[in-house]
Amino acid sequence: MRTIKLYISFIGLTIFATSCTKVIDLKLGNDSGKLVIEGNITQLTGPQYIKLSQNVPFTNTNVYPAVSGATVSVTDNQGNTYPFVESPSGTYSIAAMAGVIGNTYTMTVVTGGTTYTAKSTIPDFVNLDSVTSRPAIFNTSKNLRQITVHFQDPAGIANQYRFVMYVNSVQVKSIFAFNDQFSDGRYSNIDLIENDIDVHPGDTVKVEMQCIDQPIYTYWFTLMQQDPNGPGGGVTPSNPPTNITPASLGYFSAHTTQTQTIIVK
Image (tube, rainbow, N blue to C red; front, side, top):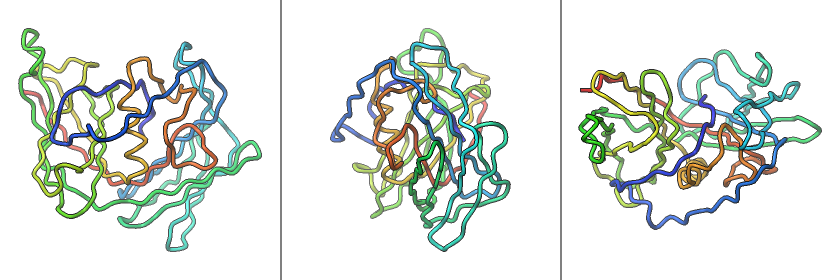
């Protein structure tokens, strides 16, 4: 589970060109008190989490009140039901569950007299071959490094990816979401360009690669396009395209996950 932090725009050209994707302009304000749902199901056996909170004005500090007392469950297209238990406040989890690639999962959240639902399908697994570092193109004077991921995109299948990067155990605030619209079937070398945390030789960098479905890609891509005034931790008065009905802030994502860690050279 990755909490939603500050959303900043992604700059730079990569093999995963997104110039033909419509940019959705979010109108930011100081709205607050809306339900935020952050749900994740992965193919790895272990705890799965769904977090409920309330947003606060983006001019406030990043303290988000937990939403307690909800009824939360997940079902799959095979007829299985997985009840989630609250602990700690606002965090709902199941101790041992593994999502199945190709299965569709439906989240149900009942809180405040309203029932929220969302569906997400775990796509095929695409292997992350390697993570490498090289001198940063735009910050050579500071001896900085930039991180590149390498993998083979499968041919003839629409694939969407999200990457999450950590530098010395701290998650960078940049969002990285790509599809294979212009690189289907090609070997991909993607620079994860960010301006949040300086990466130096000797740093420890961990990269998580998620294979995500189309609605979740749209969600993360939309947030990736926003400027640094964007929301932090669900602090957004206007929701990007969500797969939750009725529309609320946040998302429910069923995806594959894998990580690689390197010592930066």
